[in-house]
Each structure stands twice: as structure tokens, then as C-alpha cells.
Image (cartoon, rainbow, N blue to C red; front, top):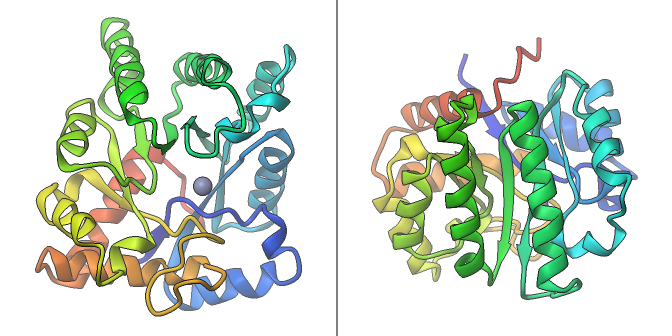
Length: 269
Ligand SMILES: [Zn+2]
């Protein structure tokens, strides 16, 4: 059976407090059988783990988002390491750099990013990378890290992670793919005026993409502006198929294979 995967969905945020059950049901009715819930701080990382204990369909990533860098302290890395022992924690994230909000100094953002990348390397779990206006700093950091993975023969060297909700240019997308990263495609690709995203999605190989909602944010057309939810990952995937002029079924299968390869999530049933 073919099924959709939502590789980035914040079911652990308050926006889903009152109807999580129904949100998950609607996703299942739409044919979604994997939802990856990333943390943005320790509290939401723990909630992600709790959600995946309750629902077969859910898997977790744990990490501290750059916008929450000021919450980081000397004990944070050990707390993350402990959470990572849970069998349904399949990635470290979301982590990265955010120079748009700039809630924390770039130096502090880089410090906690480096610490979490080190943890990912140690336990061989891929990264879920957040970027906002920071690719110029981020790409060299990722390139250097991948180099160390290659030198040490780490299994992550061939699949270091995903640049989630990617909004960079084509050149940067190629660079990321060359490093082994997947490119995360989210709701904005469905907007008719998102010409750059259409061009990028058409140009890069489907074998280097995964689909996501980034719910509750980035709702796809025709739900733009509403609270996003995992059922709507189907709209993202349909748009990818359309842009690449591929049959929907083949598109879903390839994206699913990519997600399985990156996250190695065990069967949900
Ligand atoms: Zn996110």
C-alpha cells in the first residue's frame, strides 16, 4: 500500500492541544502513515516523545531550535542524549540558524548547533535543519561536518539529514544534495506565485526530496493562512507530482522510500 509521510509536523505545539486525536485521524483517512514530530526545545522534545508513545503513526526528533537558544544550559545535551535512547526518536531537530527572528546572538546559535551536531554524529541520527536568512553561515558549517563524517566513516555521511522547508536558491539546493542532504518541500510550493520554488522543485531530483507540512505553519493552497495539519501533506505531494510531470503514485513511492532511507523508522503497524 502506498502512503504519504509528513516528515515535519509540530503536533507537540499548543495549537493541537484541543483536537490532536481528530487531527491524527484525518491524516490517517488521507492515507498518511508516518508523521515526524520535531522538538523546538526540551519541553516540546519530551512532548514529541510522549506523542509517539501514544500514536503508532508518530515518530519524534529532539532538539533545541535556534530561536530557543537562550534556554540552553550545561545540562541540555545530556537531557537530549537520554531522550535519544527512545526507539521512536529518529533524528536530531529541529536545529539550525535563524537570523530573521534573531532571538539569540549568532554566536550562541552556532554554539548550540555545533553541540547538537556532535550528538547526532555520536549516535548516528540525521539532522533536521532549520534556516532563516542564514544559509551563508549554515552551508559551510554543514559542509565541514559532513567532511568529518566522511573521514570517520560514519553511516550518516551518505544521509546527514534534511534542510527542512527549504527556501534557498537552486545553487544552494544542489550544494546540499551534493553533501547528501535531502531537501524538504513544504506548503509554499503550492502557491501559484511561488515561481522560484516551482523552478527549484522541477530542477532537483525527486530522489533528493521529502515532503512535509511544518504544521501548524505554512498551510498549503487552498488553506493558506489557516492552521496547517498533516492530512494536507497530500496537497504538497500532489503539487510536486504536477510540477515534475510524474504519476502521483510513483511520486509518493519515491518520497516514501526517501523518508524510510533517511529516518529508518520501523513499521508503524
Ligand atoms: Zn518546524
